[in-house]
Length: 131
Image 1 (cartoon, rainbow, N blue to C red):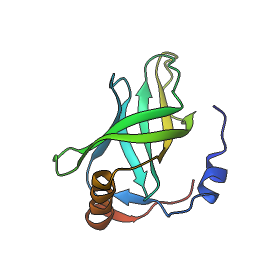
Image 2: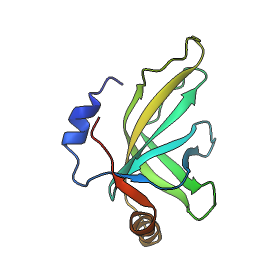
Image 3: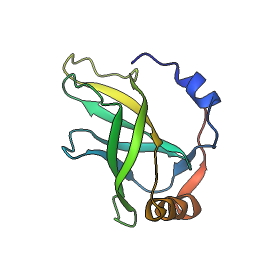
Image 4: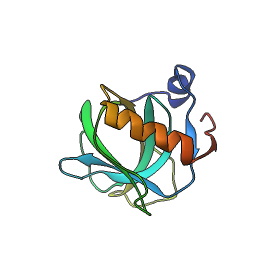
């Protein structure tokens, strides 16, 4: 998927924020993509992960978001993949690449919305820069 990330940022309804703690995200049910959360908003998240092999990214996914301290744990959050792009990095190995994936939340339950509100109230460290 070839998407200009800056254009995606300009279309966002809600501002994205950096998080204070080490927060991770994984795709369900196979947990084959695991990465570090980069930013979060009321409408979505972005994260970076290491891809060891070429994998197709499905259009719709369920994710888990959790912190190293386990203060945060959102499970089975429905999302739509907005972009999944290679990040310029220093890895020279052809089998390994760093990727950045942007997700939009879809059809959040009241429970998910409440947990998300908790993260935005208690775990953000400031606005995320537009890249």
